[in-house]
Length: 217
Image (tube, rainbow, N blue to C red; front, side, top):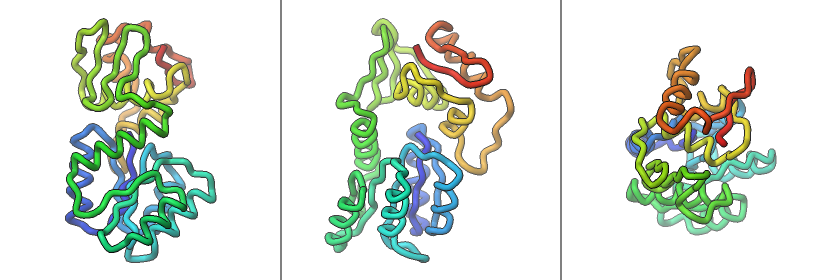
């Protein structure tokens, strides 16, 4: 997923960012609301992690603002023990969940996965498309019950496409899925990964819409 992390604590932010990247996510890290607003103005995020107290304002104000603009990205609030009233206000303002600091990084990813499944209308941790099964929790792919080994970026692409079955996914959307801000994207990167995926899962499972993008079928 493409994740926006909004957190001004450098130690915590670095730990969360590195952990999420190791879990095959692309992460943009904003340490101020100004940077956060700039990020959501230019990029679609599959998920937002939001600290409530930032150096240039309140995370709650940011949440209310993006919800007023109908930005539907799932939001999990990162909150301290003594912020009960802010937690309640955050949930009432459109947050999907919260996690109390300090937290275990694997609990964080489990909560992200649970919220993402609810948001996508998926009550189970598996997605099945024909003979292909995606284990969303453990990030594993099976075809006819045989595991297919994927790289982290190959998984990121197939995961994004599987949560939008039979829908066209543009090249730009795939690039956003596998790269964070500051990463260099070569012109043929997406085509290379699509080619690799077709060799592993079968060329007929990914349809090309020339000049528009790809879809999983």
